[in-house]
Image (cartoon, rainbow, N blue to C red; front, side, top):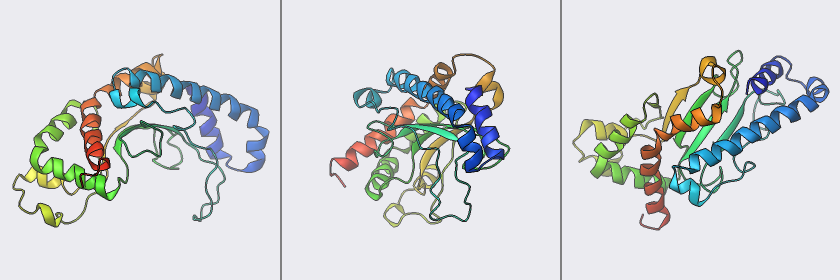
Amino acid sequence: MKRVYDFLYSLARNNNKPWFDAHKSQYLVVKEIFDGFTAELIERIAEWDEYLAANKPTVKASTYRIYRDLRFTKDKSPYKTHMGAYIVPGGKKAPYCGYYFHLEPPQKKDFLGCSMLYVGLYQPETKILASFRDEVSVNGDAFLSAVGKAKGFELYSSKSRNMPASFENVENEQWRELLKLKDINLTKVMDDEFLFGKPDLARRVAAGLKKCGEFSRFLNRCVDYALEGNL
């Protein structure tokens, strides 16, 4: 993975088409390395996540193009200076809880500004968010327990300023704060020591993500409930 990281570092300092074209063969090598890592990570997560095991995504359905969409941004840099794999049952466009591995040298903030792991629901559909809130309103301690078991990860999410009107009667203060969540996710920053200090990165990443397994299952049960037409 160090070879991928070093390429991204150089790309951030030379984010232009002539440089990329001159180093296209190098990019294809690091893409192959990253795709191989993603394939291994999918298999390792599927060993303990029953949702993923039942509907394993392909590498293509879990990764992203290096080319930036320049239509709606003032920054016309043509290439992303990060690489990511979002591993979700059914592929990255599916509504289920996913596991995201993000590799980004910190010298230039492109997307997240650092290398990190993410587990959760990003911009869930309205009915899925409603399902999550319904479950938390009666079973908030189970969600807090799942968060607590994700050692090394932090709950990080955007919040609504006000309590959703239909949950004003919820008295537990911790649950009330959870009901304001708009994205529901756990994150963990990966430093250079974690990324490169030991071998078997995919195994170590999967072992860390396994701590979030109960969190993921809680969210996916909420997704199932919503998709079954219960809301």
